[in-house]
Length: 343
Image (cartoon, rainbow, N blue to C red):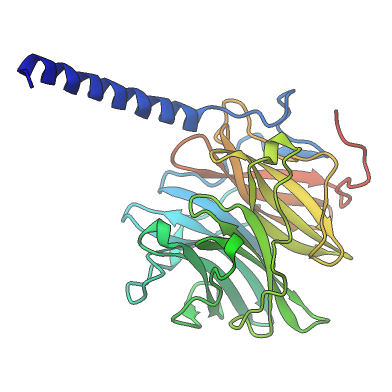
């Protein structure tokens, strides 16, 4: 091949590769308006004016789970720190706004083949014991993720209850990955209920359901997921995931992520009497990206607490890297399921 032609070919390839990379980066960071009118919240939810409340100055923080104990809020979350490792961390706050610095409470486990990273945890506190289910990542994402289980007496010091995952992908629609477990203790049935995400390793596709008497041995009672994307809703047409489920009165409430596509997402709300059959909120999505905000591309995993007068919802937002955690509030207990859809 003549040297001139070879050089021209190399230059062309470099230009093409650079163009592809810049295009991909631009698509990833593009702001996303989940509602045509640009409304960032609906149904009475209001974003805190000084969001985010947990900053990424120590590395990315995401996937919050909050419990209020006495006069203190405690948040367990994923922490991509400077080591670099992906681990689980605990921070505390008196007002849900001003938080302490992260401290690792569960790190990757080099002794196993499925905990190269640990993240996306949810907890249940029963009596004086904290029970935590978390996502364990295999070294290669194509090999999938699975769910582990640990317990603690103080929320800081944890003991893994099994060297192996307590829940793994076994059904065709689960593909290689289970992640984002959300667990409730059912006092009447004397069992744990878990809603988990399954599907692709980058982001999940659907939400499945399992039960367990002890937190270790799980049964999947259904051969299909219990919550899937609605293709008629553009904001969640691609996939759903990150479901946070809690009991409130006679209802299960699920705050979930709806994906327009892989990189753009908003938060929806659904309710159920049995945890299996779900009714979407008529004003979904309830929390959307804010133009120019820390969450201008996506609103991801969330959790809530009701303080007797208002709801507090923490979620992680993204407009690039690092991701950070914001706060949204809702005055009053009624979440507006019986209201007409907004236009």
